[in-house]
Length: 283
Image 1 (tube, rainbow, N blue to C red):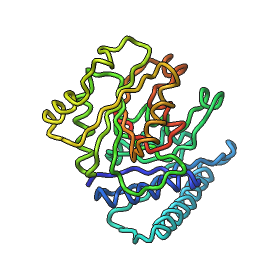
Image 2: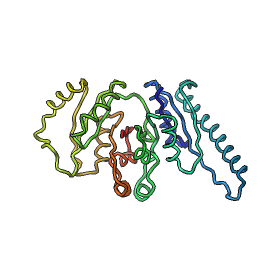
Image 3: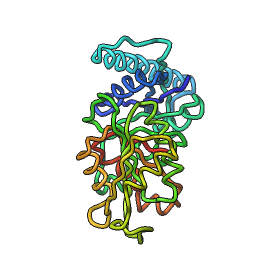
């Protein structure tokens, strides 16, 4: 059965993502693995026996806290937890991101749902957020949920792209998601600083959508063009999503070099800091 990994640190932000994941899993008939990464400073002079006992005790306490936290989330949603579809895991280690990445491989995860706190300025450049780091590193899709967003239903998906050459290939994946959720798709083409491959004023949107719909056998498509030369592209996309009452935003991540990652966040991870709607990032 397909499994969703839902990391939580017991914060209000992660609680919202937990509730979203519960309802999303119920709608898509998926199994959920609720996860917590824990760490405890243990004196270096401790014996190996004392160290192992401290680790064991810490993990046991966090497991109890994790189960209690999740059960309270189910109770607040008035949903009975299905033991066959829910699992729990606590990993010990000083890096939550590394623990999550290990779990993806060990548990054959095909989707991660995480909350996002947001970050700005100095903190964002130096530390980022765990959600943004997971988006950068994970090979499976990551669904980042804003701390104040509540799951209702997913009726409208916005797929944002700046590369028309990749549009059709990426859109096939988005269509498969939309069909499972019975949702429409708004294609949002972003024109950045580079020279556009067509003149927006001469572009026949209706003809393009008609041809694309026939090719994909999906007829609930819209097409919009955003001029990203003014405000930042993440701000433009967030504004679009708010105005169009989008339920989920989809973007595809790309491989980037070390220095580019360090000094220039991708559009996808930049959005993860300031989301207004859930963002599904796909490799």
